[in-house]
Amino acid sequence: MEFATVHSVLTVILFVGFVAFVIWAYSKQRKKDFDEAANLVFDDEPESKDKKIKRESDHE
Image 1 (spheres, rainbow, N blue to C red):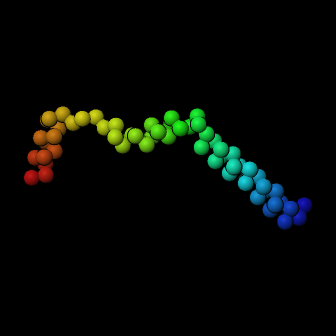
Image 2: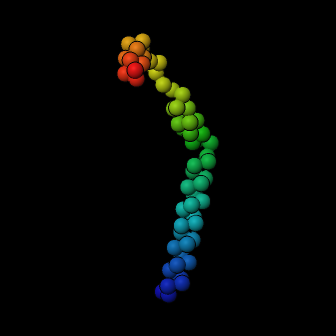
Image 3: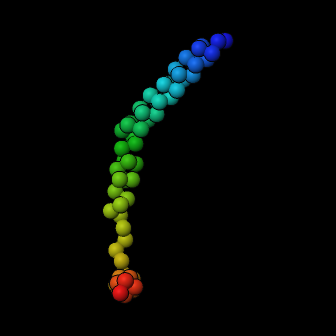
C-alpha cells in the first residue's frame, strides 16, 4: 500500500471515531450526567460555626 492510501484510510477512521464521540457526548442519555457535573460547584456542604470562626481567626 502506498503512503497516500494509508493516510486516507487513517483519516476516514479518525473522522468516523470523531463523529461517534460527538454523537455519544450529545446523546440524551448523557444529559443527566452533564447536568450533575455542572451543578457540582453549587453542591457544597454548609460550614459549621467552629470551622467558620477558625477560618476567620486564621486570617487576622
